[in-house]
Length: 315
Image (cartoon, rainbow, N blue to C red; front, side):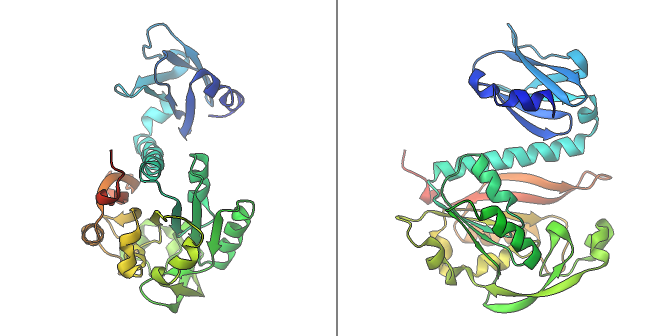
């Protein structure tokens, strides 16, 4: 989805059409009322055009599939149709980000705690989706934090902290050199079999803080705080959650990466993590696959979005 599409992308909203890349050869087009179809101009370009009947289009080696009565169309070329796993995961990521943005808006969230921020991908995505509230990001790996700090420098309401969050205030050894998979936990045997990057690692001593000890500073200046907790800490999410103590009741929602097949030693199974979140007053609003085994199709991890129903706005 490059070249001509990139040039046309800025014009699409004027026609009421939005085009979102999912993966090479696949995209999602959304429009609430008008009819349209797509033509594959070449292997990396889609041309969106209006039609009279809104029928699926198979010209140019591409296809357009209507997604029920949603007013959206899934665009695919032959390669995208053949790579089912890649397409499914890309679609799940898109649906998850759209759902989170909708929940932040519905619940009036004005502060997102971005725990395990890496270089700020999650925060930048929220901004692209229209979230304008405060973001507070935590990233303990020194080199990665430097890139996060640079990403946030031009955003006055995006704060960054060079630490991990956990059950207690302490110092710990972080396994580094695993790119987006750096963790305070060692890899499991299953993780070692799946990812070659786990074969070697360096460690860095990093500070760990409790969430409840940093909340006042993070929420300072907000009238009527409505925080949301996003956790992506490579097996350490439940420790972050525990570090909120009784103040977890102040959060209107959360997002956690929960594992069906554990990549890290000591990480909780999915059922244990979800049970703890439910005990804390949160209910599931969405589950989206993050990774799947190519050979078996089994889901390894889900992004689980949960909200506190009693915090929802009154109709």
